[in-house]
Length: 263
Length: 131
Length: 118
Image (cartoon, rainbow over all chains, first blue to last red; front, side, top):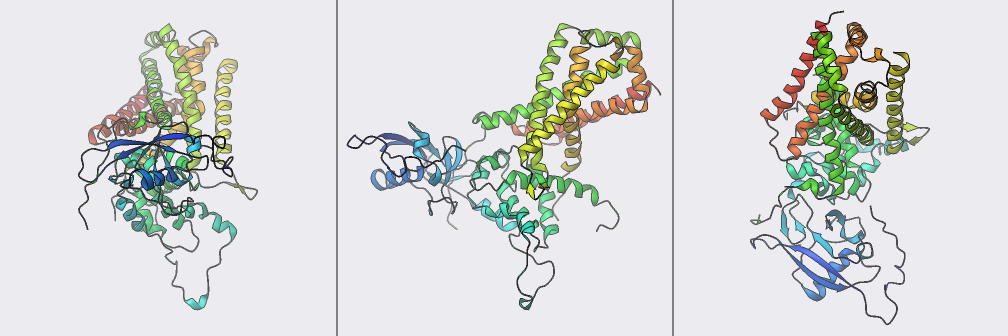
């Protein structure tokens, strides 16, 4: 990941005081529903050392072209809304800084492998559907009453799934995954990481039900261990590890099901 | 639900668009050379079964400049295979905890590459010294 | 119940071949393809009589079979998936060509190794 240090952020301005602000070209692949193939539009905007790509887009929308469409919310890399392709790499717009892309031009495009809805907004329905499909909740091993109190979990038990719980559903991993791009039936890195999060949680008892998805062609067996998903993840979830650990589990189960004592 | 008129971008040439994907394709391409070497050995096995004259002809081909040059290329490809194999292998393993701390992937990769270099060196030594 | 993928079986063979080639590939290529042909090895490394004796030995037979067969299964699985990456439809024809090829190579290797006897 490029350096996102904050040097110069406090002072704000890049050039010497009194000088004209530096300008940078922002190119955006634009698309309007039913408006033909996407085409690039470009603006040259003033920028300062503390500006993110998201702020550049907000400048364009506020001052130059109100029709520019993009998702955003928290602007601090926790909501997962502002994923986009920045110079061909899946990045969060709010934590990608113009100072690291200068002198530009900066090429922005909607997240790869998703249908473009409008400008930088993609149709995320497939991903949302997959999240729901993997049973993203604790299914108790045995029925548990409220009078039994809360679950207890050791630090070691927490460590087994904690990193996979950090996913912010930003879909950068899906934009990184060529197998998802080639075949959107693939469950994909993010949903599999979430599946693995619940399978590894000591409170959960639904591993067998989730493995049904894992064992299928659209489960882990569409993955070819490219590994780019983990490379682009802004939260170090390591979805490649979640998917590929489940390859090992699925392969062992493929043989274990022939052993006596298994249903 | 509103009718969406979305645009789906084509995947042609996807692997040419990023150095990460180019490295991935290089890794995948090593398999062609692994098969090529296996076929050379298989050819040798068939020649072995056919008798000394045919086997010696196979040895003579191996000694040809074309073959030696190809095997030097194979050596480089197998080295890249070894490196890329152990680079991705940690992803297939559950966390390895040593002394309370999780072993980082690079440690597993380094160990794997070290074992591979040692194993290949041992094979070479075994052949050269003990044969 | 979703249909289970048949890939695990081939993936394990791919893994075994990948590991074997990662560990010994460099050494094998160096000995058989560079050092011995250039005369840097003692003649007994690849002479007919010595290779025959090695192939007749149970362990030697197993080693030669493992190297040839597992390298082929490794390549078959990876090439099959790379064809898909390159846009070739990963259907029955591709599967038969790749895995079928590895199977043919395996059978030929076994036949040659059994033919030379014990």
